[in-house]
Image 1 (cartoon, helix red, strand yellow):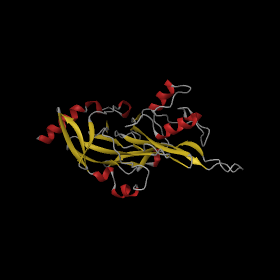
Image 2: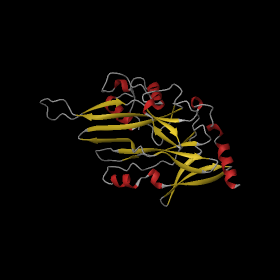
Image 3: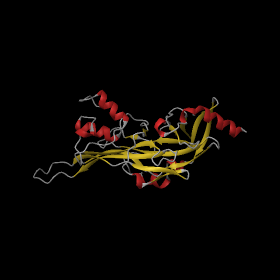
Image 4: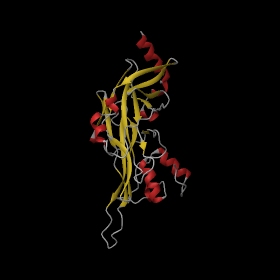
Length: 282
């Protein structure tokens, strides 16, 4: 009985997260929060005016082997934000986007790193399960030998295979430090170059999102962008503006002359507010 009441409370609170199609997807950034207590992780949410919690295995968010591999890195990528973005899957369950990011204060490297993890919450059973947890480091920046490199993954929601269930799209952008052209100036440093990779889709099936190459490169018009969590700019946007004093990737040095086909909403807003140039955002 208690479980049914809890489920009813969550369902009522998340009524805005039950769209007829991904084209009308609503995002809820206030319903869920990630709580850490004595090293244990839990989802906290409101149900009928009361705070409830469901535990989350720490290994889903902080795989021990990957944590160990990061011991010599400039900065840890496991600094998860308490804020969570929730969205409806279309099958009565909710997708939850969790994100981490940490910036190294001081030092010449100015390193930063973070991850993105997706869980699935079932209001009827009051349980949480893995959705997509193996993406590794999804956002990062570092300066080495005088050149900044960066990468960022942007996330989209759409029913890419039209089965009524919300799928995940990932657009990856990079700024790489390529070796300088050979010349007599031995002091020349590597040169930064921007690139955007075609969107890759993870289709929801059997309780998880799995990559499906058949939909690679498809950008549906009804897709919905997930907002950044815990940052105003992505590492790529931060580094790109620092180098080229523009928020527009079309004005960045690129591997090809084509403009980036995908523009995240926060970047479009920056371009609208700063059509020419502006002070670098913090």
